[in-house]
Image 1 (tube, one colour):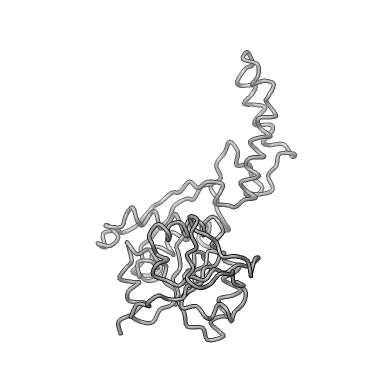
Image 2 (tube, rainbow, N blue to C red):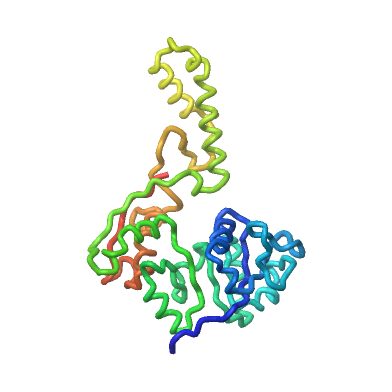
Amino acid sequence: MAYTPLVNPLVGLVGWRGMVGSVLMQRMQDENDFAHIEPIFFSTSNAGGDVPLINGQRVTKSETRLQDANDLKALSRCDVILTCQGGDYTKAIYPQLRAAGWQGHWIDAASALRMENDAVIVLDPINRPVINTSLDAGGKNWIGGNCTVSLMMLAMGGLLKSGMVEWISAMTYQAASGAGAANMRELLEQMGALHHSVASELANPASWILDIDRKVAQTIRSAEFPKTNFRNTALAGSLIPWIDVPVENGQTKEEWKAGAECNKIMGNPPFRSPGSIPIDGICVR
């Protein structure tokens, strides 16, 4: 049976204040999306507070207070829940909502549900037919994909949709910011420590660059150098060909995602099974 679009649905927004969520709110405002929904803003820390203003405007039509993002009854009012709150929130709330009988649409930026059988990874310029098929079949879980996988697929979209891709080898070079705030802070601490170790030499135009280089290397290898993150490895002045945790076949999880998610997005058989596209590469921090 063909899917019937919701009219002015009640949409619960969770995680709208973070980096991903705030960009999404701005984009929704720019695209006039709020005119087509009844938004309800939820918060994990400020329930009862004032709803936010987007570009100085209140986009809610009737709700004036933030709702509790952990209140299953309040959440179950929604036709759609759109969350950028992260995987821990999804793992805690989503199963309880479904167990309580909630039948709404769950739209999620986190990875927690990506590989579930009843979830579709949404990349509509590439897999709109997969999305439509799931909608017609009653699908309700719509999950954002890994950023590097999505970019790779958008670059190869025409070839993928034409079925002309036999295999893919893709390398990524990803910023420290992708590892989170603690890792960003440590990288800055490392850079500061390196500069401090050779500050006097840098101030002297006559100093020998090879001496500076040698001292920098010694500082990086020293026990005092800050490197509790990035698997206890120095990122400053270096590259780390390892992102996330190890998985089978000698890959990291970030490398595995390319094959697993790409094939799921395309509606292909599962990664490494007959009919799937072989994909491998190296993901470097």
